[in-house]
Length: 280
Ligand SMILES: *Cc1c(COP(=O)(O)O)cnc(C)c1O
Image 1: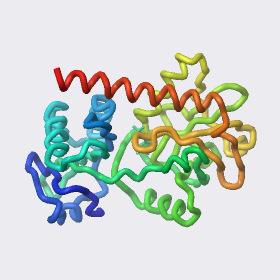
Image 2: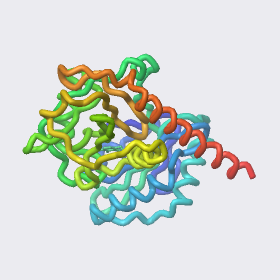
Image 3: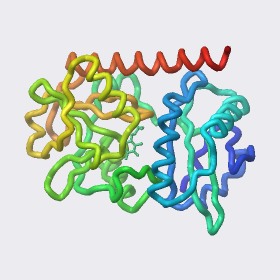
Image 4: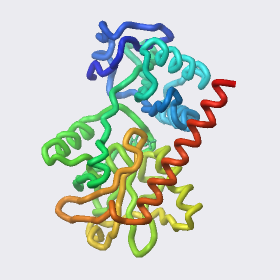
């Protein structure tokens, strides 16, 4: 894989290493589990939930994850200190090279959208194909590479995956929500990577009395949708401007604006709570 660690240091099996030598990255196989966690003001947001999911992914791949949450948190803290930054993304990888187990903790650059792009909404495409094990957050596959090149070719920010029956199952690296007839729709848990952001959005919709239907949407129904957005750790919530050649006015949708606001409040509340805890 790419030598993608940024800043001066990363951690390999408890050891602080200089990013001058990232040759180990070339030996990481695609059959690895991973997590990406956003760090804001030095706080890894929804850390516990990400660790929980990483443990589930490891179990699905039948590999162990012999590290406590506290140990991982210590590594993140050490990297924050050594790399002298506090707003960044951290990536965790659990892999096997030969017969050895490896755990990597390192910072990656946020591939983030600009304010302008959020305000304008993103373009996405439909892409025929499914991930093999929806609940497994794993590094790669030839399928993932094909999706990436389709995205690059069309200039789309994301590809919505479509199964053999023509149903939209999930984003290739995000979760998808549609507004239709005053209800919010999202594909059912069994077909998707169970996103941390997805779960938070579903919960806050309950609070705003917006009913969330876990149902598949057929590609033929796209034109009945009045708003849509994707969710994910690094992107948060991104309203969709167009799906292929169908335009949607998601950015002007008041319900979507409300969801974006409430989600941002929730992230801020988490940061405040945990800042208090580290300082006390
Ligand atoms: C990581 C990921 C998501 C988003 O999950 P978050 O926990 O919200 O970051 C969605 N789909 C896939 C395939 C992913 O790998």
